[in-house]
Length: 258
Image (cartoon, rainbow, N blue to C red):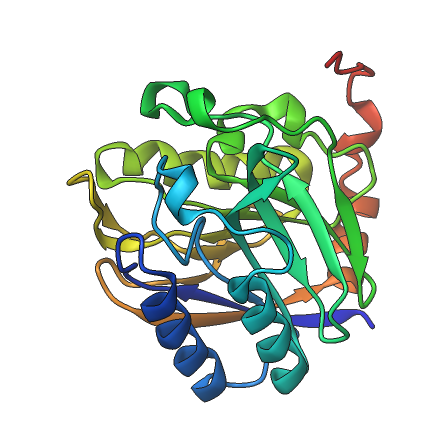
């Protein structure tokens, strides 16, 4: 498959209320147009919370069960992050939930110390790229966007998915860096961000988008609006561009030491 349709869902989040958020998102996805992949914001079921003892779930929790059922019903993968508990540790885990109930997991590497995330969560160590229907996706979460070495294309992916809770006060950086990651990596970039006000009085106004490998927007959500945006990832077009503009071949070799 050279073309894959992606849907990004931009929505408000009920603070630390998984049941309400699951009801909301289930309704949105069930009523949405067909897509191969649906992308939701970071911590879509709780908001960006550090109250890990009251908001976390394990791998068998209701949130993951609901996402599996939605993916199966819609015949599409669903991407987001949740607060995952495992072996007495807590992770901000990106979940790529497939229609067959298989889950690809990436634990957020760069924890936002200024927001207290690093005090409550354990950082991931592994960079995760997953091939779904012929498109290789790099899975990343919010603050990872600020660290280009972690996002650097090693000729191993076609698109980056960023799920975020990125407040309006730093919105300019969000929009600029999403375009930069697309341009420098010759890759599609998919960004899902929330709207509304969270329990810490942080304000979010969206900025969800799908960007092509030259840095141009294919789809952009309206500010402060709940909506679903769609665009196609076309690997044939991508490969033609990469073959004609071979910047990735000139990239510096490096190794990330964990």
